[in-house]
Length: 409
Length: 124
View (spheres, rainbow over the protein chains, first blue to last red):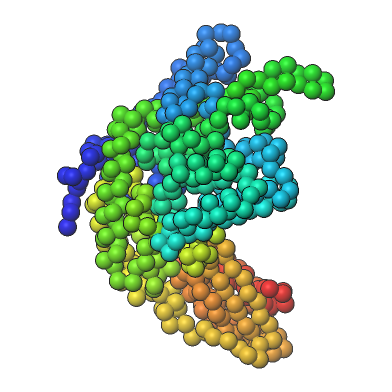
């Protein structure tokens, strides 16, 4: 049996020491990073340092502390913009990917998508990139069309082109990496196809941004949403990227302070990008914490993390497939997760029995009910991996499944 | 071996005596726990103020299915009023677990919800 990662590009033992929650007396086998990642000490300390030395409201005060808080917030934006290959003006801080997608649906979508227009989704979408478009379609009379899946959980080849050829497609909204199947979708190809048909493309990068380098210009996408807490940052902070000319033409989202230029009794005018979309006092500590998380990820190296994830996912897939009757969903080439079912144990029972051995996995439909209907299972168990996991965690999971089977047989 | 999966739960889950249908039932109800995909249907034959016989069908986790078995075992042959008086703590007592996480409590209480739905004559 393989032990620790001699072949891994990462020093996982050293990385684990940076994560206080993983450094307790009992080894926590945390296999739920696709739900939320754990946080390294530099991020935790950055949040404390912000409150201990820099806290003031941003973009308002003229005193030095307020200027320092504003500078920290805008530096965080610049860090995130660089991380995704965007300009700061195109980098809007939101609460999470869900809020970013709702922002687009309620502004650009409401202004540009009308009755009979088509919004293209995929059958593997998380509810975050499904419900906002259902709500918009119900409001406007637009139609939703879905790209189906191959038996091994990839997007049907040619399905997008066929839907685009039908005309009236205004938007293609797709996830980059499936949170259940692990499928990595061909975003650059999909962008090219969408643009050739005169459509825009929005990418849910919640499961991508933590795991490999992203570049919105190279992908040539119009919108991209990510969430901070899945990439070592705090909860309640995320980023929406929008192409500048589109953002300029978009109506605002929430109204309030910060997003205005001049307020009149009947009408007002809007602030410049990106603040036009950031009404109210923002999550400043979240932004600076997320920027610290980006620095941590870059110090480890996104390419190295990607290689580590690929190795671990392949190892997990091969070990899990040794278990008789286990069905693992999704393609061979995948992101850092495996969702599976066992014929004789319900996912919730498995998750509870694994929890008794300090193994944290997710059980349920993972906010992807349509996909589970497609897979014809009510729920799956999902083990997801990150830079602080290694083969030993996978081995412990496999042993834990064996134990659960003994209890439930 | 397991603090949650007591002998009682395992036995009720693996060897349910009340799994099945009652073609001549007087009351029935069906509900689900959409978060987990647990589905439960109960059919009761009520005779006067007594639950004469009771059966359940469905699929789901061991907690949801075991609590259906244990609850029906408890109410069969007893007064309808006793069945309607059952509460959360009675279910946990039947399962033999004093504590359960909020997430799993929903699994445990689905059976109680379906039982009361049937007795109150709700339409599924």
